[in-house]
Length: 142
Image (cartoon, rainbow, N blue to C red; front, side, top):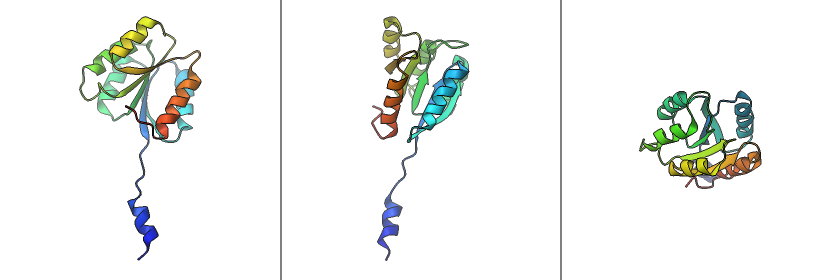
């Protein structure tokens, strides 16, 4: 009996964490998508640039991590968070704000709707990248 085949059969491949991006700037979206493609263990599964499109897609498809901006071309990230918090299947998912709107009021409101991480687009890109690397390498989302 070949034991190496049996041990390979028992090994399971962990699927990548699915990241959904809500961002209305095509340049920022491209930058984040390029960055995510370089992080093992993560896969960009979709994006939206409006609140309505994001809500429809997030309810339809599977995702593990949501990265969203507060200001969108239609609607905003806070309204989206409120709607997601009302859906039992989506309320406890990992949500990360990546925005230029980083005042304390936005942070408090975001936390009320389940946001655990809040990053400033102008200065925290590396910190966001490092956090995503941790999740990609197996750190718990909880």
